[in-house]
Image (cartoon, rainbow over all chains, first blue to last red; front, side):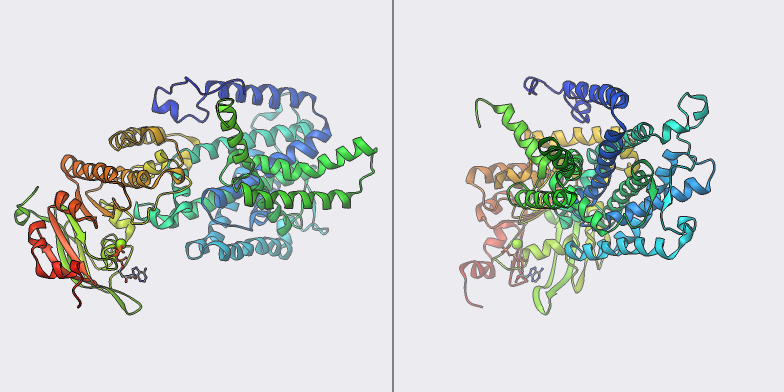
Length: 368
Length: 262
Ligand SMILES: Nc1ncnc2c1ncn2[C@@H]1O[C@H](COP(=O)(O)OP(=O)(O)OP(=O)(O)O)[C@@H](O)[C@H]1O
Ligand SMILES: [Mg+2]
């Protein structure tokens, strides 16, 4: 590392409360976001990089962050993630399709609210039950989503195939869009969808960071670590749990909306199945419970590993040598092994590994 | 030391408390007062029901019979949240810190009742969030300084030694600015030096902030030293109640402590 905390004295509580207390961190992060993410990447990346790598990683990262709010920060297990993504995706579609004036960011926000309300409803059992049993009850959300969108084709605008293609629909991204040089075609392109996803993802990361560095996040963690003590010091455990469920499923709902609109470009409830809920849970475990950075590391790794294996295979053995079944099995084995190793050696996941190595670098070479 | 407890107002009145767990009696017919501004020690052999008594006071356990009157308000069923909002702070016998959080954050959670900002205000970091956070931080820093926790401010509490954890837990209770503190064996398992520190902290809080303290303690020298009022329990019953001197000369208490058969 090329800079450290040594000698940096924090001179006020306000400065100590900053999202990134180190000036260098702020500089590098801003530079990265503005110059790399909005600048170079937006300018140079190919359609493949946008659609198959960056957009899905960010979208899954948001879903993982959502689950992490409930599980990592508040200690409430859930297997309903894909179900809540599904609510969000269908809410966004119906808002955009049925309301002419709707804007994408507003639709995604409202989709998040609707998913959040479902989260409160399915989170109610959390007031009574804990741990393993809560998993069973959140599964209900998963099956309810799959059932309701199957049983009521209105939500799909009676599309007979059960899958709605989204890109042909007109959508607006912001007011007075027609006055800018960026037309509809741009916003439908992978570059435009990347910019939408990136902006929403950054906003959600900032909001999450704000919550966890304030009373909201402290209350979540207090309930997670010891709910009786939390109650005794005056935290309403019920309210805190429901709020965490709301925020968690809000994030999942927005992720679901982005999944349909920005990533796969269609609406299909079959995609938001239990497997996807498990996948997001693996991302949380691999990345690190209760870590924002970890949520994205987990999503990037679990989603990116099979792609990396395929690419490496292509590079080493020539294109198309590795068949998809091999890659799929390989990534199952690798991710599974990593989960087992992490659960035993480092329950904090990649995020904790990152922090440990930072700490080692800090004291190197004077200590190990 | 305070000898004029009679002339003082009771801040807490426990009347005829009975508590049993599935038929097993933990507390039988206990009544006593805690007076405003005093340090009241609850003593008794293991299993006497002392911790259960504290749990009844702040609503963790609901007694089958009896009433709890705090500052003139009578309750048949106290709730932990109500107790906290009325100004009853608490530490536990088996430390109940939030293991995944730092010392600072643990003490900050103690101030949760002062944080009125809603979660969406915190998400956007607007409105009262900043001022509330900074105000709390300032108060918490005073506590950190008072308890000498500066060097472990950002350390996860799970990695702290036992004695320090007990101190952090006291800090978290103090952060709520309680009117009454319930301390369950705050000095258990500590070295002599740590015990001295802890009893100094408790006495200072009591004197300087006027906080009423109810504490459970096994070390008699500490009890004699710090308390104004002692309640003795044995097998769920009250066998002594008075000044430390009175209690020490009480035959029942002497018997209980010398292990005379019942
Ligand atoms: N939650 C509970 N469920 C069942 N029995 C309990 C419970 N809590 C306490 N008891 C019983 O009540 C009696 C009093 O326990 P309590 O913990 O109040 O004693 P204590 O005086 O604090 O003892 P110690 O000095 O060992 O802490 C014991 O017999 C104990 O087994
Ligand atoms: Mg006890």
